[in-house]
Image 1 (cartoon, rainbow, N blue to C red):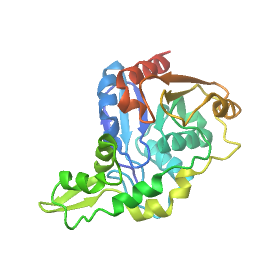
Image 2 (cartoon, helix red, strand yellow; image 1 turned 60 degrees about the horizontal axis):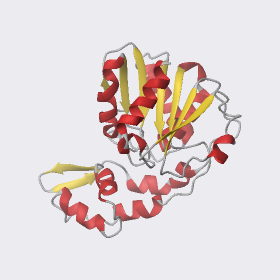
Image 3 (cartoon, rainbow, N blue to C red; image 1 turned 90 degrees about the horizontal axis):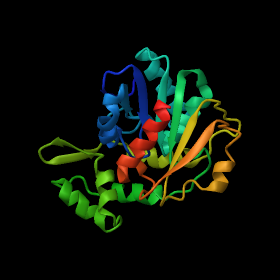
Image 4 (tube, one colour; image 1 turned 90 degrees about the vertical axis):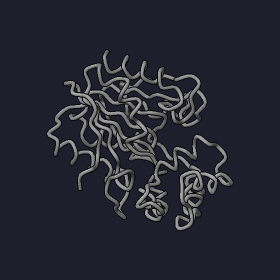
Amino acid sequence: MLLKSKIIGKGSDILIVLHGFLGMSDNWNSFAKKIYNQGFQIHLLDQRNHGDSFHSKEFNYELLSNDLKYYTDYHQIKNFSLIGHSMGGKAAMMFSGCFPNAINKLIIVDILPIYYKNDYQNILKSLKSIDLNSIRSRLEADKALSSSIKAPSFRAFLLKNLKRINNNEFTFKIDLNIILDKLNEVEKALPVNLYFGGETLFIKGENSDYINNQNFKSIHKNFPKSQLVEVSKAGHWVHAENLDDFVKETLLFLKS
């Protein structure tokens, strides 16, 4: 099935963006609006089980990679640059190993192809605890979530997954049961023999611990033409927390 997307800009340089876990294409609107006039046609994708794309009980990085291949074949995109954040970064790395000739430049945001143990299970259970039959507004949903998730900005990010189905009812765009069941697939490492020989930029947030000097060195064999830059005053959601510096680093790499 074809992934849903938003296409911004009419430039000749194709740039595809893959969002992170529990995210969606909307998370990247501000980024796209900052750079589309630099000669780019930007495709913001909703990955399976996220945003407005299809739901499937099958969920792993090989499937996410194949979903992207089907999308590019459908749109007759032969060569493009690719950005992936977090889960989307792992999907992008998997794609780069499977279809290296399709990629011009690769940007991976605050993730490596290694195993990560996250707190996603508790986050998903918090979302599942919201009684969608009783809430009548996003504000009520926010209040219901505030006891388990303290950061207002993170609650706002998660609640972008709510959609109104009529005047008095809400549902989630994502299938929480499927994602909870397949959570181990999100956390797992990519194949040890994964290899992409093209130009690759890894971007980390200054306040994030997903990438450090030691674990970055360990993946040089997988991405021999890679470099690492750090964006200050940002955590794991680098593109949201320091958009201006993130844009500067991505354009410097894509245009070089």
